[in-house]
Image (cartoon, rainbow, N blue to C red; front, side):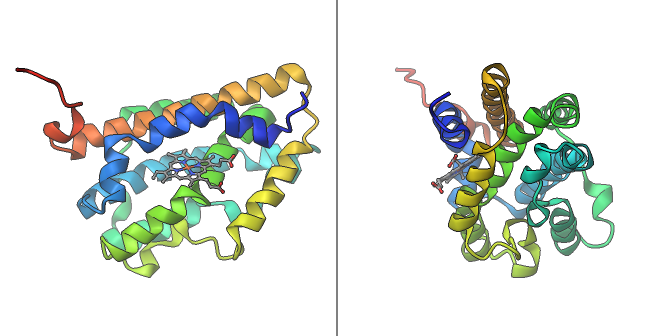
Length: 223
Ligand code: HEM
């Protein structure tokens, strides 16, 4: 229990973070080589995931400890909807589809984040600190390489958080102040690892749909 929760979360999820970062779909995204349709599909998955995560907010806010980690400026559901409307037009809802890994992620959010403050903490940490970190690099690629217009990048634009680094430090301090006992803290850390793996699974499903087989398979020596 000596290590503060935020530092423990970072250390415990390092391997899962690297695995998610190295998924082929993420590699193609970061190289700016994805067709726009693939990015729209990623946003569709985010739509389902963030709705399930943010549906937990009233429950978490009602908890005297949990209330400190629900921050208005973090919520992404509205910005995902406005990005989809810009990219796909007014009938954007008709094009939404939820991949199997996303369905599993949403089920997990319902069972954990929506019923247990620690579950919300694990999943909110994984998504929001990610969006404020690597997400900012993704934003740059979408803008510069894939020419996604600024008005379709609301998902990565945290209007009330001008300095992500300062915000992340303050958010970590809130995590550290949560009154979890030893067992619950261990469960929170386990759940964050699950959250990372669920994200990697979503990238795997997206890769299966959008990447040619040659880019999905590891190189094998057939000689
Ligand atoms: C495009 C792929 C990714 C890149 C380039 C990337 C990059 C980074 C970088 C550079 C940081 C460190 C920022 C800092 O120290 O303030 C970071 C932190 C983080 N990333 Fe990622 N990331 C990627 C994918 C992901 C994914 C898929 C997730 C999970 C959904 C994720 C979740 C996180 C979290 C939770 C942190 C905060 C770690 C901490 O300080 O506790 N990242 N990422």
